[in-house]
Length: 391
Image (cartoon, rainbow, N blue to C red; front, side, top):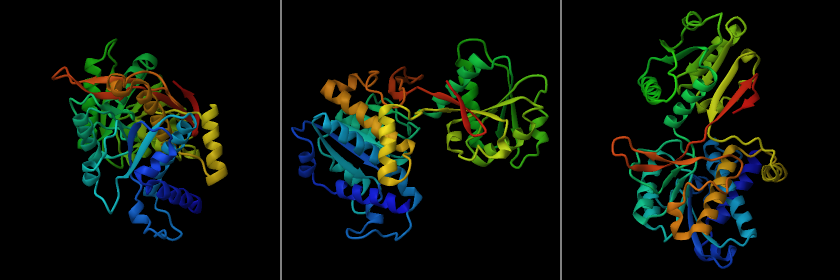
């Protein structure tokens, strides 16, 4: 597996080191220019002649590489259609050129697509606003404090969006259940609870009756079970971003799921808990929100999966589909709308793999547009680690 990923890495090195002139040669009659930013770690892992990590492959490198692979696959498909593009690839973890230097030397592109973190989102968004070009933040689920910027598009839905979606989901499906919100005693969980109660205060429809419970780290089962009801379906909301707390909550509830009928509602981080199919979680129904749901049964997904299996002996992660989908959709919009793309960022076309619902985020204090965000949230139900339902 590591050997296969290394082959992907070396292929990326080869492409990323192409000059702009050579890049143009890949796409005849180029017109539109796009910059792509991702954490590739090229300099820290490759010295120009050999790979530095021997037989090992650091896990932290993989997400950026897979995002880039999705971007490249989309560019290949667009090139086959004759879409005229000039693409500039930037490694946000480059050791030879700092991120600020990359921004200073960024050519006259018409769009930026990035798989970037907290420290890069705002500088890229600010640059996009100055140049009046879109910045598509494809994977980071946070606005990084950006306001008053109609050129930023956040594709990976933020926590406020997820909390709002959870509240509506509870209203629509579990209003008559026994609702209990568990959180640990921490400032982060206090912030999350405040976000939830603010959402409840502004929501339309009948308000929910929810019991809020603080528990200490390392809590005993009785600290949870004493708040459940044996005569009703218990809707337990895991109001925490702490993985240890969430796992402890799930492992506490699971053995009692038959005596205390329970559905456990979690935030999008639950999608990363890959061991929910273990026997100790049996019979516990777990529901969590996710901004991306791709059953991978459509023709293109099958083709990409086959490509990975045949060339890399592995399965593509969601990062591959994020990279492909973002590049395809917004390159197509750029081709269609050109300089007017800024007025058409929310156009509901060219979606691949998953439905997107890009909407303006309005600042409640100023009543102005802060940015655009994908408001689509899927609710995935798992029992014994197997997807039972998707809403």
